[in-house]
Length: 169
Image 1 (cartoon, rainbow, N blue to C red):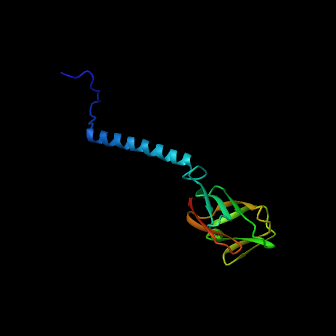
Image 2 (tube, rainbow, N blue to C red):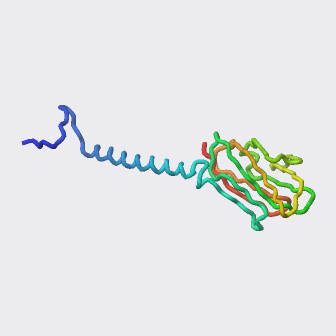
C-alpha cells in the first residue's frame, strides 16, 4: 500500500535523507548569514553609517576629530577636526602616525597658510584665533592600504589624539 501524500521520486533517483538535511541546514545558515551581513552593512560596519561614525577628543577637550571607524579603499572618507585657539600667532596642526602612509589627502578646507611634511608627519599652520572661535578643518581622504591604521593629531604642543580605523579592501 502506498501513501498518497508521499512525494513521488523518479525511477533511478536514490534520495538520501541525511544529505537533504545537510542541504536544509546550509540553506538556513546561509539565509541567517545573509541577513546578518546585510544588517551590518546597513548599520555601517563596512563604511558610512551609525556604527562607523566616531569622535575622538583629547583630555582637555581642546581637540576633537570626527571620523569614520570603517572604510574601503575604493571610497572617499571625510574627517572633521575642531580645535580651540591657543593664543599664539600661529596654530599648528600635526597629523602623524600612519596617516601619511595610509591616506591620500584629496581636500583641505580651509587651506592652511603653510603646509609641509617632516618626519613622516603632515604639518598644517593656520592663523590663530581667540578661544571664543574654534578652528574647524574638513579633510577629504582616500585610503591607500587595507588593514588597521593608527593616526595621531596634535595641536601645537598639546596632548595628541589617537584614533584607529579599519580599512577593507
